[in-house]
Amino acid sequence: MPLSISFELSDQDLEHFVAAQRGATEAAANKSQEEIIRAGEELLKQAQATPVPDFISQRLTKLDNLIAMVRDEGWSLSEEDRKRVLAALVYFADPADVIPDSVPVLGYLDDAIMIELCVRDLKHEIDAYDDFCDFRESEARRLGLDPATVGSADWLESRRVELQNRMHQRRERDFGAGYGASSGYASRRNYAASSWRPSIFRVR
Image 1 (cartoon, rainbow, N blue to C red):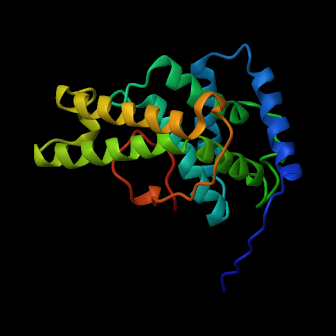
Image 2 (spheres, helix red, strand yellow; image 1 turned 90 degrees about the vertical axis):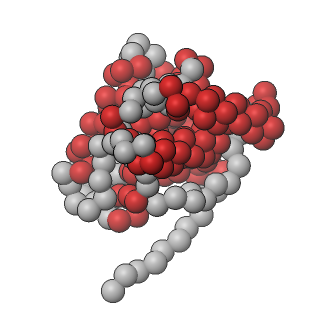
Image 3 (cartoon, rainbow, N blue to C red; image 1 turned 90 degrees about the horizontal axis):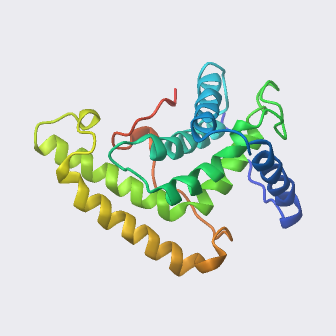
């Protein structure tokens, strides 16, 4: 019988995670972008091979989506936008988790909370990328193509530019020069059933 539990983290509670993110950023100072991405992918692979609660698995699909954003040839983020996403991923490159991943059941709880914070901060990037993936899927199918094989096709370019411009405008509108101050965000998508993207994590 399923059990529903909800809890709220205060600003003081969240400060533990903010401090952990700062520590991870310092620890990752000498890591390359590729090392940061690979660390996130390794976490997903380990979690995929371990029984994890559904509520954590659902958050891990969001991490998978963030990694796909920087891996996706068709989406082709600018260096500035790419660094913004990578700055959110550095926590997952730090082996000194708030809760060690080896702890049964709850080992990925801190990762799940950090993913929610990342998703909240990157809501406009995620919305734009979701819309891009939907467009690529529908157009590829219409053209009789596999969306996994289209790469950076010319017919994607104008839509990509349009969506990334929208992303920048909304980010500037909501966050301005103080980008990083978060606003609430509830995910609108079930990533397990979403359009194609270069993902590695699958919900069981």
